[in-house]
Image (cartoon, rainbow, N blue to C red; front, side, top):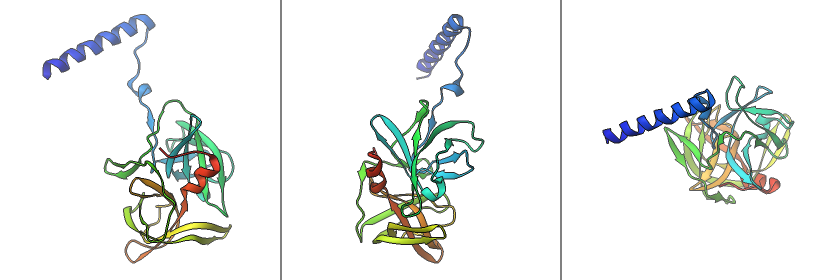
Length: 227
C-alpha cells in the first residue's frame, strides 16, 4: 500500500507540473472544493436572516432548498453559504407567511454539492427517499440545531398556530420536544420527509409540543420532489 500511495503521489505531481507548463498556473485545492448543502444546513440571506434548509428538492433539472417562511421572509433575496456572505448559492424562488409558513431557495451556483439526505450530527446522515402524508399516530423525528434529534408521534394534523403577523393553518402537531434555535428542523419518518419545524411550546426539560409545516404541500405547489 505504501508503494501505491507513492506512485499516486508522483503521478499527481507530474500532472500538476504539466498543467502548470501548459497554462502557467497550478489549480487551487480550495477552488476545486464544492460547497455542500443538505437538510439541516444553515443559509445566510442578504437581508441578515439565517435559516435552516429543511430538505433539498429538484424539478426540471433545477435544485431547490425548502425552509421556514417566517425566517426566510416573503420577498426575493440572495442566499449565501457563509456568515460573511461571500459564497453565493441561490435566490428566493417563493415564500408564504402567514397562512402557510415556507420559503423556497433556487440554487444558482454550479459548484454546489446537493445531497438529498439530512444531517443528524456527528457525521451521521439520514437518507430521504420520498415524502409522507402525516397521520395521527405516525412516528416522527426532527433534528434541531440546538437540541439535536428527538422522536415521538404525530398528535394532530391541520393544526393552527397564531403569530402576531397572522395565523398559519394546516400544520402537523407532534410530541418531539424543541428548544430555542431549533426552528427549521427537518422532520422525517424513517426515510420519508414529513415537514420542518415552524413553532413549538415547552422545552426538552419539561416537555412540550412541536408544529411542522408539511413539506408535501410545498413540493406540490412548486412541482418539485425530494430525492
